[in-house]
Length: 175
Ligand code: S3P
Figure 1 (tube, rainbow, N blue to C red):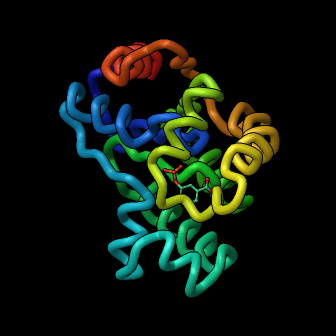
Figure 2 (figure 1 turned 180 degrees about the vertical axis):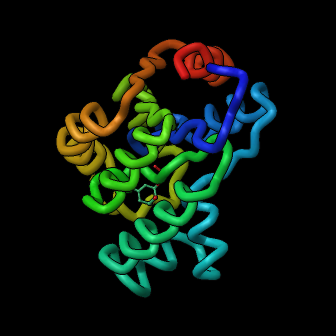
């Protein structure tokens, strides 16, 4: 990465359980950059947890809040930013990410081993998109989203078998 940084750095996208937050924090720490997580920002903005917000307002409203927040952040956040797994499925967010790339940003698809990511996502809990048969839901979402993540990202980092620290190093080498 070039020494002269003016704004955009990197956004992490990928499935629930891929380790976007964990790895993103690590990358930010090593690169001495600020870190932000879209879900945490949303929870702060709406004043409730994501599951609570889904329960009260529903997914379409969540997607609106999410897309607006991401658009604002991409305008002026100078660091490492991890998005919720479903965020790139919103067309306006895809446009905002394309614009971010055109300004020199990296959109990193954190491509984890599906079985590992699914297991982590289920274990973590607090994910309304996985209510019910969590494995079946995760797999269905993965089938829909993986092709979109590949299209939207300008960097793809495969993390199978890597620790978060190793994955972070790999991300750094590629952005
Ligand atoms: C979602 C993923 C979650 C969170 C919300 C919806 C999704 O973020 O934004 O529960 O649609 O995949 P993580 O990917 O950080 O779990």
